[in-house]
Image (cartoon, rainbow, N blue to C red; front, side, top):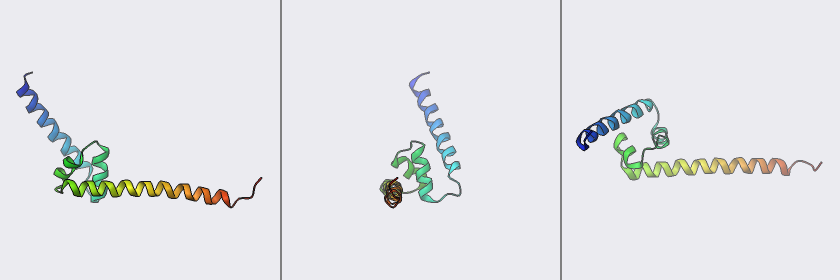
Length: 90
């Protein structure tokens, strides 16, 4: 296979992968779409191209999603600490 044939095949596979990824997003909200595409390994620019948004918009959403996850983890730790502090020593 020469370089030109490889390029054509690679472009077609990229298009198929994008279509499959977009199909998985059907009916989901934008933040969930971004989260799914990011988990599939797409970069912010690729996600932006697929969703018709700017790369900066996607980066901001990813930051908000990560920030929300870290806050949830922090809250879980706080709840455990407060529960164990209120228990009498055995």
